[in-house]
Image (cartoon, rainbow, N blue to C red):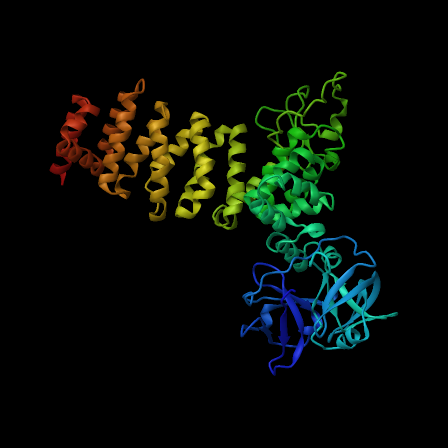
Length: 579
């Protein structure tokens, strides 16, 4: 059975119980267990103790609940059921002088919570039928206060017991239903806690949540279960809740499931994108920008895009284009028959000729690149690029997807993409999982302008943490790149950054790119130009090339013609004469 946290005052007197609800160690309990205390002592299994100061306690008086920040006390979080309705007759288990079975009588009783400041009316609480011994254990101030009400079948938490709750007709215990309480304040602390709970505390069977789905997906093999089967199982309960759980997880498998939903439940993803685009959290903005374009190709009917039917907003047109209107969700897209610069929403596109009998309905074409979602998502992303988005691997991975998709439409923004990669590289090896797939994909399939901008970033010395990853990605670029414009950008950055890296590394890069350019039409001229011209303006680089010519004459003469070698030697002597 679940292990609970005992809550006491400084004198050791019991005030109630609670349970760990997320992977941060947050304990969820009844408000009465901490009401009036400036410091709270929490006891875990064995000798684990945590002293919570006043700033560690988040009282939720209007919900008769409280959150306490701890180190987890060695306990795993319990899953919270996200059911909209707790059905009367449901069998549950509660801790009241030992674990006891009880039964739900109703889940809509009105009750009053008596706090030290005032009375608080709760619109709906769960009423439990329990035996006489259990009722005695639920007396005011007992250890049962704040304990979880567990579904007898799944073990998920349905509600939190309260002994200071008063109802007009009370025959047993009363408890606060957590899902309903969170719904009363969707942006509050409890709702955020339950989001984390879904991603960190595995729930199964009827209470299958994201953490449970990911665990089963990772451990089940053979005839039994796939991510899609789990997805179908859970989305029957509440598909909108599922999208929120998946986006909160920021996990690669969660992103895979969102991609499945984009294809199979485009209306749900349209609604989610609309919510995320308006959300102030950078992770939600990034998700909106990533999944809006991913969902658009699967919008087939006005019903799929019904959430896009809000009053259209005026978009900022590109230079030379007429203004267009777009739905705020960003799932709108231009149909093949749209006039240039227009962007009808799916709901307004019903005038498009329908498909011929026996043929599938027409899909919407590529997403409109001027939808407001791009402004709402990319502007905060750029502004916070060195903050939360880039320091959180999962958000950085989504940001990488956004950069890749954006460049497919707007290759002229290559400089911004290169700056994004440059900042990521400065995070060192930790940036690898997010930045490596993005850069490799762009180096192999991106437009020349994008590859050239990235080449300059990879050739730059960067900070100490970035050396290894820059070198690794440069090692991919040099053998595969055949466009002299890209190699020219790389060589220019090698010369410009010579003072910031060891001389041996610069020589190695010159040798490798010189050999590569020898095999490219027009490459030898590029190599001579980019080696001689910097030597004219940068005496230190000129001296480095001169030493290379002196130390490895045969190798250097194969890459530089006689005229270029004489120029470098002359410039080097002139530099020494001036010195």
